[in-house]
Length: 122
Image 1 (tube, rainbow, N blue to C red):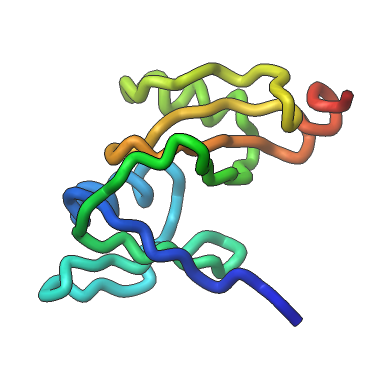
Image 2 (cartoon, rainbow, N blue to C red):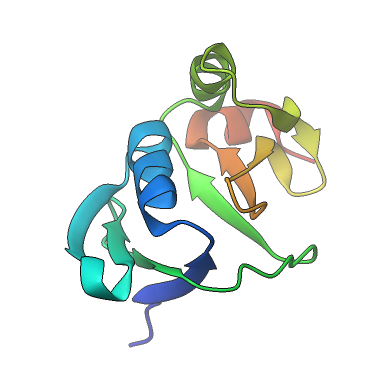
């Protein structure tokens, strides 16, 4: 069996990123190591992202695709909070979804199963 278990992601401010992923995307704080400036953030599928303070280097060819309950509703919610999107929910080459960036500029693609089936087929 092969399963992605965790990702280590350098961020400029580990506490700001921890709060952003928790408050905007619903990740849970699994644990923190303040003396190492690290927060382990877990999604509902048990994938953990280790947000650690370090050199956040732009990676324009890399994007994280995150499944949400309703991409249109999540877009409305985050837009109302003042979060800018690269593009709103729309049909794109990989299906149907929205794209935004986190505080360090990492690309995040949001999608949901229903919209993907109804609007993303090619």
